[in-house]
Each structure stands twice: as structure tokens, then as C-alpha cells.
Image 1 (spheres, chains in turn yellow, red):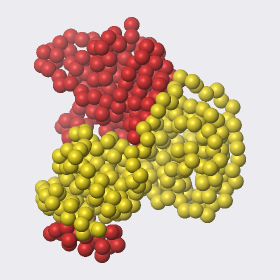
Image 2 (tube, rainbow over the protein chains, first blue to last red):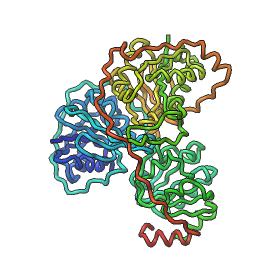
Image 3 (cartoon, rainbow over the protein chains, first blue to last red):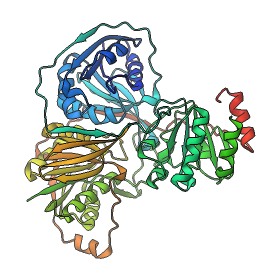
Length: 313
Length: 253
């Protein structure tokens, strides 16, 4: 029987949707029981959201002023102490989970399976390697605890309807003071979050400038969409780095992905493989993006995008 | 002596389109161009810039791999590393170390060299694990600042800007610490021919893996490699109106 501990990602008030996807991943482990741990300064609000997720059997809440900002060096020893009785410890494969979970795995002395995209058995997992150009199936030896990060684009979020009990716990560990939070940039807009948006409008180098890239924001606002960018557009300074989609940026799975002026480098395609419908607009009919697009349109984006905007009004 | 250790992994070059072996046991690497993991080049560049600003005295490039990895270490020396260490693993299938074992090896060298900083790539572009830096920091019981896009050294501490999903986060960490690099930290320099000649004379120490006394027993086994599921090629539309009509028909707009 599997006993899975999931580390909740949150901003102090709201549970990140990646956590509900971890719950779905854990639910794919046959006969498992799922516990969610919420570490925060004041975990009450987030713990009750976690308790309401379908499939969650228990929520552990850890209140500590040191947990106000998520820092791996501070969280990991607490999680390692909580993890003793569990067979699996999962977190989302977001920057939060990628930073934190290997540190937890190291303290436990156990292997981590990164970017779990499918569960074959309680010890056998599938994950992408080489920027998604190969999928490897990995098996963990018997009798070893397993740490993992969950590729959130591969799982649907667990629904509501849970009524798990919330238990306050206080792991008896000494927390390091060698790592201190200074600041985090405020969210740059009230547009939908790129990671969880149903629609995404994404721009590439062909936008030509930060000024040109504003076309993406205008179109996104007409669609109620989030804005993404290729690495080329980010490197050229047209868009901020948190918009980057791809192997080294965000891996997303929207219902609609509109790639504009993006050629479709393999490192970008790995970030959008799970999009339900992909639309590509590019002046180069040979661009690799058209190989994966459900709808392709060859032409000048500076004419097409404003026209699309008008048609969508 | 203020030292910076930099991890250098030999990987299939960024521009190579990888092919699977027909039996699913791995990736074809015979005759394939190999390079320094791009994130490790950024790590080395950052270490060199810190040294050139007077913030460190020595930059040591470390690789764990078969003797072929000496090529990548020579490149690192040509870029400007002062010396290199190869922890040589036996060649053959399954010779690569898991992240926990790799971090254990790095820890041995960290304890020997006593660096002020260890800079690693945030992930290797072959296994895409993104684990080794964090594990090393935990085993060493030191701070980690992952996915760094800006590093400022301030005496006994470093102020590191990190690329996180929300945007940019800044941490202050006591030294020594482990950093892992994101793409926008810097642009690595090109190697010039005279530097390649000079690099041949720089020290490159080879340590057999077995001599370090680190457990490298695998905890996981690769069952098989599969190609990724392919998306079906879709249809081409002639203009914006036809596109909007198609998206309407599918209920997407």
C-alpha cells in the first residue's frame, strides 16, 4: 500500500493548482492514501483548500514564521521529518518543487524521479528526457522511499468534494538561518496565470521588438488568455522571462495555444506538447511549428494579428 | 585561497536531434557531437567573471564521466578555468551516476578543495533531472540558490536573483553556497585558438571513481526509452476569418 505525502505549493493564501494535479498523479497509485502537507506562516486558509480536494485523506499543517516565504533550505528539514511514515513524497515540477524536492530527497537519502508524466506501478514511472524527445520508463528498487516531482501538464486537477481532517504538526527540527528571503517581484498583470490558463497567446522573435510584442497582450486580452513567449523572444528582451514556454521555461497544457511568429524549436515544442489545440501563425511555411499545429496560417503576423483581434471582438 | 568549483557535464550537443536505439535501451551517441552542457558553460562563465573582478582566486572545473569527458574539461580550461578534475567512471552501459551519487562525489571534492562557491547548471539537457545542485547543498548543509539570473558577492554573503514561476526572487545566502544557473545569467565567451593551446598545459587531474569511496549503487533502473507520442499534423487555413471560424466551430473562442 502506498502512503503518499504531497507538499502543497501556495502563496500564503491560495493553494497553487499544481497541488491538485499532484493529487491526481498520486491517485493513480493503486490503493494509495494521500496526505497533503501545508507549510506556511499561517497555514489555515491553504490547509482548508487542500482538505477540500477530492481524494485527500489527511492534511498536515505546519505553522512557523520561518515558512512565510518558501525557501528549500528551510522547508526541506521539516518535510524530511514529516516524510518518515510515507512511501512517496511528491511536489509539483514547478520552480517551487524543482528547487525543494531534491533537497528533501537528499535529506532522506532516496532517489527522486523528476517530471513524472505517468505512473505505471507504485515503483515504475514515465518521464521525459532530452527536452521531451524521448520518454524514459524508470523503476525504483524495492524497499526504497521515492521522492518525485509531478509534471503538472500531464495530469488534470483533482476536483472538489473532499473533507479531509486537518492536523497541526510541529516537526522538531532546527532550521538553518543561512538563507534569507529578500524580495520577489510582484505579478506583472491581472491576466490569467500562464501555467494554468485555458488559452495562451504566445509570441516569438518575429515580433521584432518589445513594442511589437504588445500585439500579443492586446490579442490575449480579447481572448481572456495568458501571454507566453519563446526563448528567443525572451532572450531578445521582448518579453520578461516568466513568460518563457519550453524546456527551460514553463511546461503548459492549455486548451488553446496560439503560437505567433514562433518557428517551433524542439525546446519550445516540449513546453506545449500537451496543449489540446495548437494554432500557428508564421510567415515561413516551412517552420517546424506547422508540423505540430492543428491549424496553420502562413502570412504576415503584423497584418493577421490585428485582423484576428477585430474578428474576435 | 578563494576557490569556485564548477560542474562540467559532457552531453549530446544542444543542436543534435537525438535518435533512440532500436531496442529502446538508450540514445545513439556513437559519432554524435558531444559538448559541455549549456547551463554548465554559463556556470563556468559566471565563475570566470567573479575571478576576473577579483572576487575569487581560482576556478576549478570538475567533471564526472568516462575519459572522453577530458575533451570538455580541456574546453573549460581553454575558456579560462585554472585547473580541472575528472572523476573517471568506468565506461559501459549504466555507467552514469544517479544525481544522489554525483552529488556525493562532488561533496568529496568540495571537502577537499573548500570552495567559497559551487556553481552548477540548473539542469543537464540530457536527463533534464535538475537535482544535483540541490542535493549537494543538502549533503553539504549549505545554502542553495537555484535558477540564478544574477549573482552579487558581498563579502561573506551572496545576493542571488532567481528565476521563479512568479517572476524574480532575490535571496541572500551565507557563503559557502551552491548556485545553479539559469539561461539569462550571462553569455559564455567564445574560446580563442591561443587559449586552446594554453589549455593543454593546464593541470587536469584524473581520479578513479572507486578511489573516492562514494556509494554509487543505483537505486533506480531504466526499463526502456520510447519515442514521444507524435501530434497529428493539422490543416492549413487561408486567412484569419477561416481560422476564427474553425476555432468557433470547435468551441475554442
